[in-house]
Structure formats: structure tokens, C-alpha cells
Image (cartoon, one colour):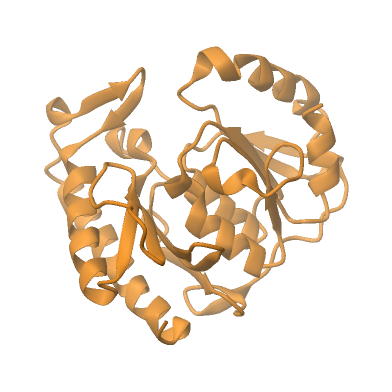
Length: 260
């Protein structure tokens, strides 16, 4: 594997180009060309075009790597390295002309994440980290917050498309957090919001039934910023994104207790 720092720099450039494409295309965006993958789960020609661009460029950057990509471009077989990409995290936000939405790119091998880059387009913020590094946003080092109590915590929730299975958990979390946490928000982009924890804006985020592309890059960045990410029982299966609890680290056990 080549130098991860220089590789991360090149991935940043690609994420920025993809984000600029998203901005340009919105000026002529045609909502009639939006497809519904499942109930309220949308994909547009913008997602697909952005993904094709990223797969092409990343294949040139690291030809030996496979892909896990939200819209199905590329293939994962038995490669030692794998790009995990979301060309537009926050598609529903994008369709409705609001933020946040982001481009998310991670690289992993068979054992661990190696780098993560998330470009949050509406704020023009590029978050990034690589194995052994600090976490950065637009060249400045970032850190998770030092909040230790729930009544001061700013918590983000995500309501996944699989509402039938998640509804009991969502109702439980709202009941336990509303009026007890310092604040609760629903923004609609897991990649961006987990990076916000890394930057100290949010203190925690909880969601289930996501895709690996939603959390791989931002999870890497959060860990390098001193935060923590796990599944709902504190384990490491968060990378499959079926259960994701992301926190500043100091609140992690308290947030896990809310789920039980």
C-alpha cells in the first residue's frame, strides 16, 4: 500500500470534484427523473453519474481495489482493498433543496478501515483522516466534544427507510431523549452528522438499517477525532451499518443504555 497520507489527499480532490458536480447539476435538476428504490428511498441520475465518476477515478488511483458502492457500480470479489463509497449521502435533502448532503469515500482492507474522506457540500467542509493520523476538516485538526452528561448532549437521530422494523426503537429513543437531552435533531445525512460529532458539533448519533457506504468514511474520521462508534450493544459490527451508535466517546455507555 502506498503512503496513506498522499492517497487521502488525492481522494479529497476527487470528493471535492464530485461535490462540485452535485452543486452544478442542482441548478438544472429535474425531479421528474428521480426513482424510488423502496418506500421513500430515492435515487436520482445525479447519484448514478457521481458514482460512475468516482468509480472510474478511484479505479485509476488504486487499480487493485474493489468496490462497495450505494448505487451498485463496481464489484467486490476477493480484493485485498475495497473502496466504500456513497456518491450522494442525503439524496432526499438534495432533492428538496436543503442540506446537509455529502460525498463519502472510505478505503479498507480485509481487516480494517484505512482512510476516510467526507465532503459536506452545502458547508464546503472536507473531513478526512487516515490510519494513524489525527482527524481534519479543511486542513484544521478536529476533536470530538468533552460533553459527559446527557442533559447537555446535542444528539442526532436518524429514521431509516425501514420504518416498520425501526418504529419501536424510534419511539423509544424520542421518549428517552426528548426533554432530557440538551437537544435532539434529525438532519438526514449520516455521513455528515457523524463528521459533525468528530468536529464537536453533535455529541451522539443513533440509527439502524443503513448501508456500509453511509458510515465507513465518517466512522473512520470520528475514531481518529477521539470519538467512538459501535453497534447497539457496543460491538464492532457497526461496519455493516445495521446498527450504528456514534458518540464523542465520553457519552457512549450512557447512549447504549438508552437502547435497552
